[in-house]
Length: 161
Length: 161
DNA sequence: ATTATTATTGAGATTCATTAGCAATAATAG
DNA sequence: CTATTATTGCTAATGAATCTCAATAATAAT
Ligand SMILES: [Mn+2]
Ligand SMILES: [Mn+2]
Ligand SMILES: [Zn+2]
Ligand SMILES: [Zn+2]
Image (cartoon, rainbow over all chains, first blue to last red; front, side, top):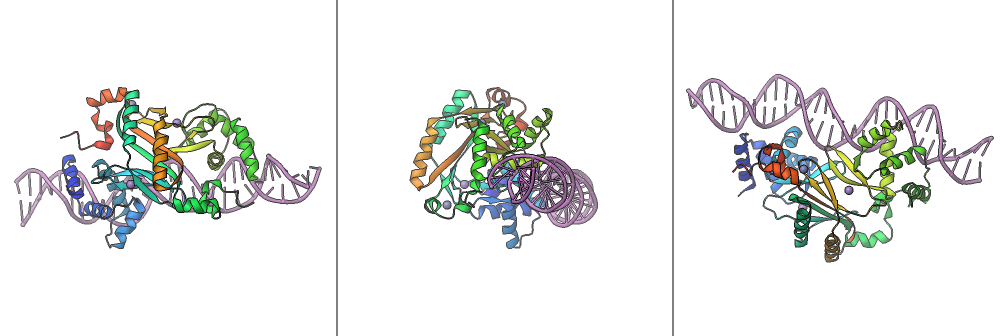
């Protein structure tokens, strides 16, 4: 089923009303599989001459989450980032702390751990978030040498001496 | 080594200056092992008649992170949450989506996955964040019956059919 | 198709966490 | 003890996310 149909279903079920603005937003989100944030999405829409107010965009996001189309993946740089989940298999993220590159991966062991821990504490687990952070091949190589400055952002105050 | 000594070491290394305000903050954070956020910490200090400005508190947090005393654990309710890491073994979190209860757990498999994935993509992995979300025993039990509404917030639209 | 009901929109104001600016203060080196 | 300059506290500023409200438009009922 199409993301838009999925959304219509949700809208009907909730007694809400569908609108062209909402469908435009969904279309834009699903025309690529990239992670995104509110502002990025707003600009993407603007570049395509779709003028949707930021208020509507922000108001739509929770609906997309509740309908199972997207989810929040991480908070970074002072704002939330999202990704589509509808139609995509679940995955975890591996991120380069330097260049920001993100690799999506899946590993069966993750689910096993989830089951084991859930059983151990009597929890009914509904989701998980597993993120690995490090340095990608390129950055790891350069990281050893120069470029220290913005590489290890967390370690400011050193390279000055 | 004491958290404060650890911090002094860091301060010296960076050519910064230590202050009673900073030590007070560290003391307050380490007098218990709870997760915390900036405002909570500010109030805890205030209740103990330690008047430290919010500005200083916010300015100190990055130093505590860089010195390896604390780390950001999650963003929720519009603000960041932290936890001490110095002196505590690494752990992951299991959280109840309803009552907010948090259980800390450790599982060796997590590290194995980290190593496997790191090798697979050529990343030098420096850290990970693994969070399981679900319903604790109590909430899961009640969740089946009434109170559905705010319980399964993330999965609305499904249990209705 | 027309009408009634009310959810949704867009523009702007508002909130709230976090930062930045600045003058006064105090931590360190010498 | 003095000089240097990092740090403090206060306030102002920033910016993401939310809210207000009048105008508009999506649905359901005629
Ligand atoms: Mn992804
Ligand atoms: Mn913890
Ligand atoms: Zn990289
Ligand atoms: Zn619970």
